Length: 481
Image 1 (cartoon, one colour):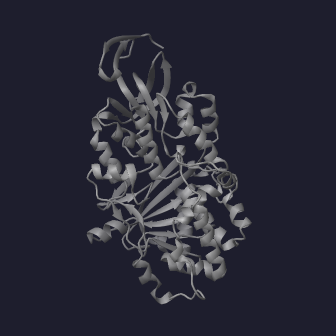
Image 2 (cartoon, rainbow, N blue to C red; image 1 turned 180 degrees about the vertical axis):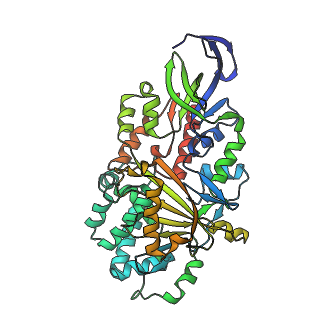
Image 3 (tube, rainbow, N blue to C red; image 1 turned 135 degrees about the vertical axis):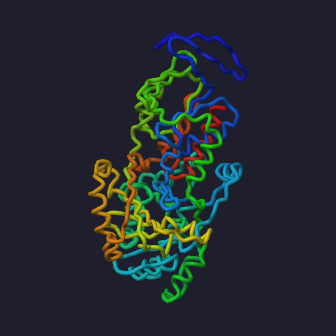
């Protein structure tokens, strides 16, 4: 490395460096302009920081496209009701969050469609009985009382048991029948990119329990008003949120808020430490290698990338934890058509065994809030592997993906593939950090170690959701401040 010479002292302990090839210095450098990095920048306020992002846009896995003047999600679709630092950030940016109109959820079992809470309950009860359904709901509600996220989690013996038991074994151990396990296995693949055999019971509990409360317990014989099921589903609250033009409204607003502090098409290749500062090498879009220095670093990129670009900066315990974090691949396919293929709910889940896990009506939210119909309709098909260990999606050709999507789509909506006028395919190599056995035990330890002038941020440090990624960005900002 070159020898660096201090030429000027500034307020807030900021120093500028010049020397052989180095002529740029920032108090803080954030690597990655996903929602973690952007949140970190937001809460750094007027500090001297720079965000380096290898892509040509901000957002990371929050990514969208546009067709016929309608924005469609290609990555993260929605979130829970914003609170805390996320709610404060949305308000500060002057954005209007919207609760997704119901029916939020629909399910196809290979023969018929089920809508809303009553529909899912009807499906599960028809495959078991009322007593079993109520047992399942109570099991989730009681277990959810034990749940808390890092950094607030107290890792008790009960938590450890759930953290070191697979979700499938936990359900089987509580005598939950196969129809429930099959239903939530495909949900697990859609939410986590991994099966119930691969994730811990503790990570499964909050996602499954989100759909239930004590009012969902069935009284009496469990007869359902099938004729009015869809109408009743329309009257439910979804308790899920997005913006009229998707989650990229938030990431784009953040990018615009401090655009002068974001450098796109700048891929960090190495971070090293020299004396009391860090040296960052990054590659521009034209292939030129540039260098800058900084006092503090926030690495807001997936853990495999951190291990690759900064191996000498990580304590051995941190490296050991990061090496245990597995990632799942993912792919999405947006399909355009002159007539709607599916427009009866926001999300249609399908059974295990299909190539994809969910079909989203990408026009659902805007059609509701702006009473506008698209000239061409858009559905987004979400594809998860059967196991997080399967990364064949990363290499699969577009033609092969389309053929498999079309084959299963036509099983649900006959001849639907013939209606398609165009498509858009997006791949995610690092889609989800998988909550394998012992994940929370590792994360509790990582949180203790994630201190100092080189800080990690991202959903893999807490939990694989948008909200957790925001939380990690905020905590990273507080740490480096």
